[in-house]
Picture 1 (cartoon, rainbow, N blue to C red):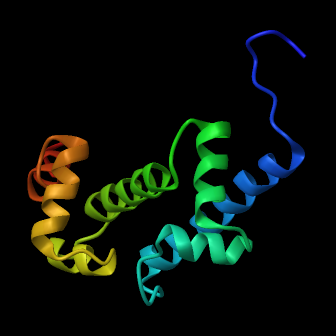
Picture 2: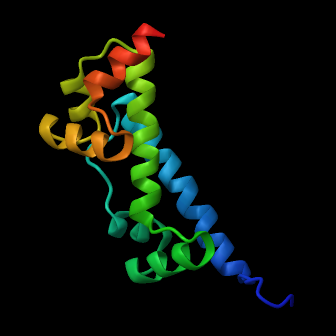
Length: 126
């Protein structure tokens, strides 16, 4: 073992891989409008048959991020993609990602510093 370099167990790596795969499936369903609800950490933990705290601790140890951080990053990627590549109204994108329009705007602005409308307008100019 190298000093200062964390090593992770096979099981920890498996949990991370399985979480990321489950997250990707869910995000794909959100993007396609097939999701029936927005998953929470307990939903992912149930899929992986582990306790939510164990999932959270493992992701934090291995990736340095929480499940919520990873989920929000993927939601932002999908939101940007939908804003850039479709003409779907912003309110409909918000609903598709299980936000009400006001919370979607706050969420988006927290990450990108601009509202979804401003983001789309800037993208369309370029």
